[in-house]
Each structure stands twice: as structure tokens, then as C-alpha cells.
Image (cartoon, rainbow, N blue to C red; front, top):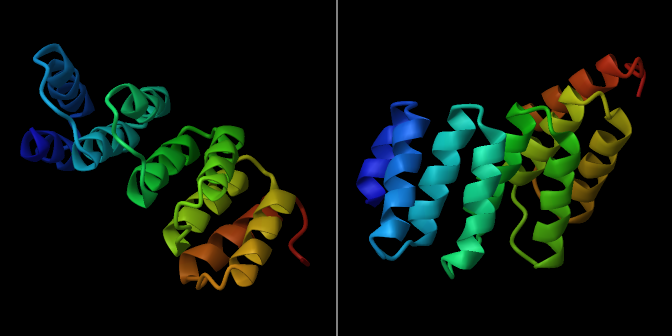
Length: 156
């Protein structure tokens, strides 16, 4: 199942990935973090943030624990769907559960804030990166500059 869902993800066929993923539950096949992550990622690529979040929240019902990768995919899906508030809520849940926050995690949340025109939140995330000793990347700075530009705060 993992291979089939991952292939659908890479082929940008999110509908088929979900069909396989949902079929697993009907056939009582066990899901893993990898299976759930691939389904979330397929929905993210298909810009189906709601479906991605359904897969993410369904992990609990499948008794699969979320990890950095599944959280990152869900945050990125929210970013692609212009759902900055949901992305930040997921980011905060991740921090509360003490799931490892990586550069990619911060970048997805900062990009979500950028798309939502929330430069103040993006700036706070960059500060939190420094406090957490998480390395900034070119993507981090690019998203931060774009967020400030969109907010008319390019001097920041």
C-alpha cells in the first residue's frame, strides 16, 4: 500500500491515493506513519488541504502517531490552500507535543503567513527559529521578505 500511495503522490494523482488509503481501512489493513504521510502528501500536491487534514486527523483513529514529516505535510497543505491560521495551529500543536521542529517546518509555516499577508506572525516564527537553534535557509529568508513586502513592511 505504501508504494502505491507514494507512486500516486509522485504522479500527482491524489484521488487515487485517497482511494487506496481509504480502501485500506475498509479492508482492515494496518496503516503506518509512512502510509498516512504519503496520503497527506498526495493531497498536499493536489492542493486539497481539507482532504490532507482529514487524513492527518484520521491518523488518531488508525492509531498512528504523527511525526515531523506528517505534520510538515499537513502544514504545507494548509500553506498551499492559503490557510495560514490552520497552518499555525498545527505548528503550535506540534510544538506542544514536542515533535521536532525543523527548518522545513518553520518554512512551511512562514510561507503560509506570507501568503496570508501576516508578516508579524512570519517575523515571530523567524525569531522562534533563532531561539530554537533551527537553521534558516534561503527559503526562510525569501518567504520572510515576501511576507514583509506584502504587508508593506519591506523595511523590516
